[in-house]
Image 1 (cartoon, rainbow, N blue to C red):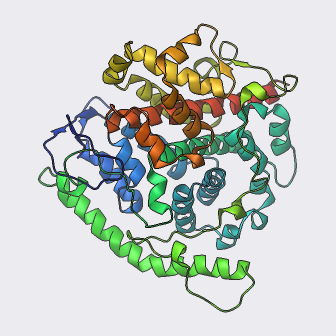
Image 2: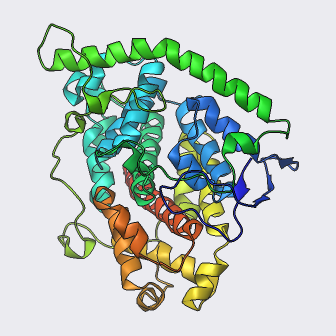
Amino acid sequence: MIVCPQSVEHPRGSRCQRLPGQVVKMSGGGGEPERPQFLFVKALASRGRLEAVTQQMGYHPRYLDSFLKMQHYLLHMDGPLPFDCRHYIAIMAAARHHCRYLVNLHVLQFLRAGGDPQWLRGLDFIPPKLRNLNEVNKILAHRPWLITKEHIEKLLKISEWSWSLAELVHAVVLLAHCHALASFVFGCGCEQEEGPGGRGSLKPSPPGNQCFCEAAMGNGCGQELLRINRKRSLDSCMELDSLRERVQRIHVETEGREETRPLPPDREEDTDGEVTGAANLACYLQDPDFGYQDFARRDEEQTQVFRVQDYSWEDHGFSLVNRLYSDIGHLLDEKFRTVDGLQSSAMAKRQGCEPSVFKRGIWNYIHCMFGIRYDDYDYAEVNHLLERMLKVYIKTVTCYPEKTNPEMFDRFWKQFKHSEKVHVNLLILEARMQAELLYALQAITQYMVS
């Protein structure tokens, strides 16, 4: 059950607390209202615990619902790419921002999907088809305005390792999703639970007054939730030894040793009983020094400002992605619309403007950093709406999230509630993802019409 606080907010990193709260109802895909506790049953079904990301997004249950649906479809439903390749692409994307939280999550899911453990030795050990995606991954993660139809053509050219258009669109959505999710992970402190100096020391708290498992009791969902927890715990115990041995063997072979050895401390089973292998993220990176560069400092002859009036998600991107990867366009569009519809009256009131004006200022500022401009928007409003510390925070989380630290989260908007700060991070996630998609889909469109 999602329990949303009324007046009391948990500080980032605190444990679950007991305070009076209210249950928020929300509608599912149909006309009948969906019981909100099932959002967390869905999340538990994949890993056996509520991840920090899920807990943070739970402050905004309507968004969490659309996020879980899209992510489940992207990773676990029928699509152009094999399941193990999906998780490996996610590993490649998360590694660009040194996001150990996401890399560890997808390493485990990659192995569970039957992925070849040898691939976890690094990019030199994967099929050329996947390795060829690395250039697009690098550009989308840091300077998406550099992607061209030539990059697309190179991947699609006829050869033994060529991509199909459908496969490439699936991969592009995966890359953009994981890059943007890395921003959310760092922005909300979820990465801290994987960081040095004490695992779990900054685990974000559940949004509300009860532990999720306790909140589900007595509402018809509790027994099902407990059953899933127990089953997943048993399953995890049985497969853990196998997964641990496979990850250990990979790293032993990489270092050229024949003897077995215990996993080092930063790859041991964590407090939730999971394998967190792949400690050295460098093996998933090529050109690690390539990073974000201010769009304003670009080579003027190389690229121009991206004008939404010429190519937009609503008029162009949506139809293309939906045609080549059935239904994903609808799920992405629902997610974009949901984050735009989240209530932000308190934030806007403190800034002295309408909620829509405030949210659009944040969204357009993020797109501006990637060279995307709206002809009908007065960018002078950004400086009026967004105070300096907020702008520094947004730019860091958006462009180089790995440089985000807990102090930055705590310093900006001290007077705002935790849920309002999470709301800002959701806007960053979605605005960044849409920006990457716009550039990639435009390049694919140019390839198709050339």
